[in-house]
Length: 221
Ligand code: DX5
Ligand code: ZN
Image (cartoon, rainbow, N blue to C red; front, side):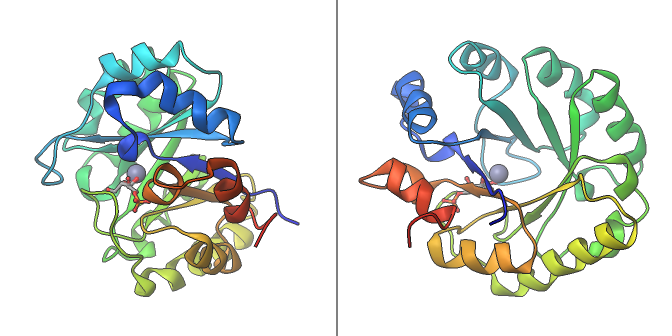
């Protein structure tokens, strides 16, 4: 069985009890903490910034998978790196002229670099930069909000990235999916080639967090 990474999104957590909510997913077997950063410009919603990442960094040793849904992410990479991010993922749509530079900057801080594409963005836009990144995040909802339904049309893009990675012998790159993940859509995403799953509502609204995480890993079905 493939080793599937589960990255619950704290966007669906109770922000009044963030420490408890992070320890809850750690105890339940999560691998990474997915942090959704939104600026009200790239997406129509505002969430949290680097100071919050810095504060919650002390709570856990789980890897911090920081998803920047912001315009001009290059301006904030330094802050999020200093706050203790392990992965920083930027959107190709947000760095049309400086994608290379942004990825290089992330890596210059010793942080792993990710690139993300929205549901309507084709895989071709990441082809040239693929060899430089550690993670490709394929959005399976329009970014901006938790709790939306998985967009099936995004599924072939996962296989497309998996093929590209195989062709270029870049198998160390994670393929992560984000949006509308539950035990059913997780199965589809993993069969298409994903190895890391972000899940907000499915994990945080569950009665039994450990069983829910295990069901995403297919340990329990
Ligand atoms: C959406 C965010 C996602 C979101 C996932 O813009 O990037 O990480 O929180 O939430 P669910 O799993 O509830 O769709
Ligand atoms: Zn996300």
